[in-house]
Length: 193
Image 1 (cartoon, rainbow, N blue to C red):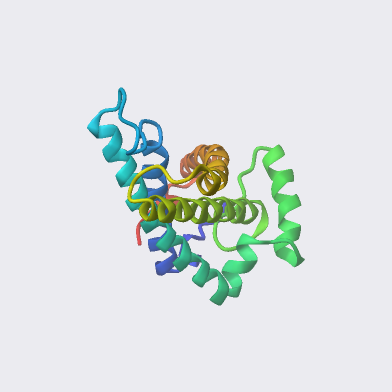
Image 2: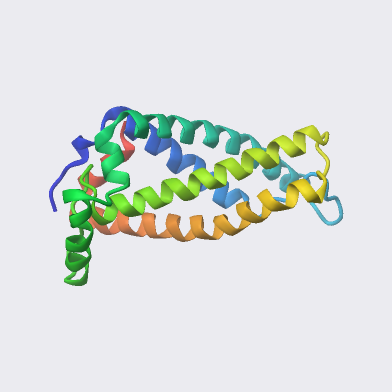
């Protein structure tokens, strides 16, 4: 495996680190949080987790917006995350063949299987962030009480459904990072902006 961490520009490593922290908090906080309008059998910590989830979710929305700005202005990043044509797309199949043989794909902005998986993760996180911001706006406009179900249920359903996908992505991402780090510990430099 080649060491291509240096291909990731410093500002993208900062955004990646922010993602790692915020998304990990969001996933872990959802495990025990309860909406602030629920009171029976709910502790103040669970309400606090809900408020923190909303606040950090808004921050995560800002980070994903910055990341999309980088995707729009950086063709190499765009080709990496959405490698559906040319050499970047052809690497998807060669990477899959390598994984079947027990070889991990190289890192860096090269497209292929890692890029396609990262791009899918960006799309899931984006949909989560958008549905979360819609719910936050509905909660705030309702005066921090439960919004009308007609408006609240569709984004809540999308948010809940995608959280399962995001958990699977997060577990897989952590597993693959650890597997890569066993081959080459320098891969973890992505967390050193």
